[in-house]
Image (cartoon, rainbow, N blue to C red; front, side, top):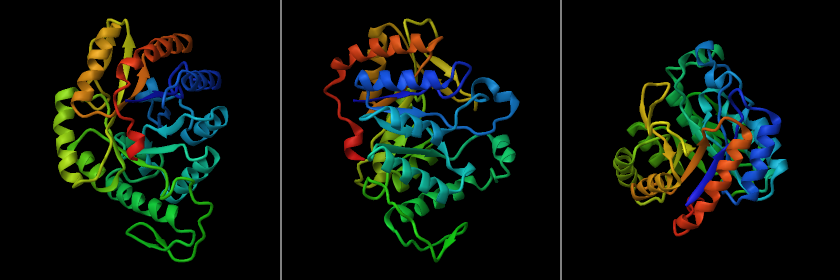
Length: 304
């Protein structure tokens, strides 16, 4: 089972030292991937937890230089806030510098005020996202690209170097809704929901398999985790969604992971709810000891 770790690149405890220590510990402990959280300019109402945040691409470049094996990903990059040509260049560059370790998780975004702060249309973000995916794939496979879309027109351009990974890094589509599932089936190499309970996940995975029409699309869930915690297993997201976290004893954590696996998850990306970096790394060590019990599960990066 693919197990990834979210970097502490946001929140009050985020710092260069925290990012470095977690990244190096995750690789030493044998985890599969490291992930940044992405926001740029949130309103003050969302200072917790996204007001203090280290920018995604700069952070991943820093982590790429600190590690050798572990995969690097965005969970998730808000493509609607950025020019996809620039994102394609940044992704190709990082894929080259990391020797093909990038996974690009992208999503539509949910915070309208952040779009307004950047002078970008919130209402048009879905059409922009979907065209951006097609445009990035064109650039990653065409040193002399040509493209005609609603938002972008490219007739005379050079795009080099191409990514190390043929066709570019795998694109995992974020989002919990059926619309996001349909988008993943149509345009993505993976689906990356957040905090879905097993029953909802099972229903969404069934639709994903139906809409994918035979394409193999891994499902990797981002989950909050709190070992030996009294935090409730259900919480409410900033958008008002009911979500699930992994919480409690080691046995309860394993039970939760098995339920996600049985519902169709190929892996999880873990955000540790710990009071400090030292506490997070201690929980990571304990979790690493549990992985032998999950060794029979397939790594979804093998099908990306």
